[in-house]
Image 1 (cartoon, rainbow, N blue to C red):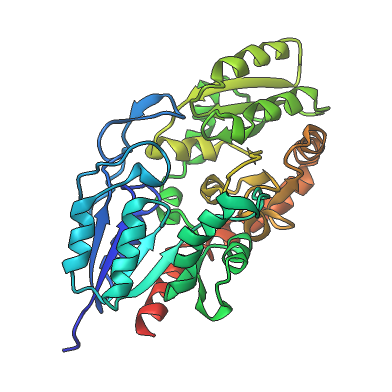
Image 2 (image 1 turned 180 degrees about the vertical axis):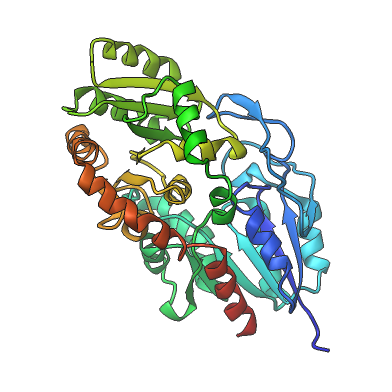
Length: 392
């Protein structure tokens, strides 16, 4: 019997999007697999400063695979957010042939990487950053970033990239093409598709929200914070010339909610428009919202590395509008499921809103592409990439 390859994964905390990855990696025949967490944020009730509320995810995040959570002595939100002496020591004494870093931008991951290299383990590094809002490539700050993180990217056995913009990021830091492997950024498509509402259920949910059956429903789903620009979306929607009745839903919480609700009061006299705030929705509650939504809008101007909310929405035949700062644009949106607009242009956003709301035929054309596209952007593709790397 072939000896199992020991794989350790180091990740910041249990994340709703990642659980499906770890469960499927644990099922691979050829590996002895374990996840090391730097904290239990999201697994226990904890406060998210952007949401402005305490919550825990309502799906199992640590079921189906071996894991260990280490005491965290970190502070702040930067490099020193995770300091886990126990984890670092465990990596030093482990006999793992492969150590997979699901992000390296903290103290624990950084030192664990160099310890793993020293011990001769193969290292897989995943980073989802892009250069779309990264303009400062000079000075001490950039030199430090290149020394700390660029050195890891260049020395890793394999770097996983999630899309075109992320691949360009690695190349910018000098990573050779031969060590770049694609592994899609994904959600659990099966989880979402199994929770689609029936037509009757969807009609009832709309009615319960006070939305008429023939309305076009637009959706913003995420934190109501400045970098995601929900206020610009609302302002563009208010100014849009729409010839059909529509509703804009805001799902999420954040510091901008009060401002948005004040802005929304300007819509009272608009016959074809309405705005509703549904608050924070947990994972099991989101499918119902996606089921009644025709258009998802993600207008972020900063640090939107991918936009997994787009993956989620595509499972429900939802058309998409994103800014040109959203990482998934080339793969999941442009010319396929909707429009990309210039990130800081309210006028351009207004223009694409009008097109997608008013032109039913165009919207239906894009909807036809959604399921076939997202079916090729799932767990099977990710696991196949990992298996090839392990076998190499």
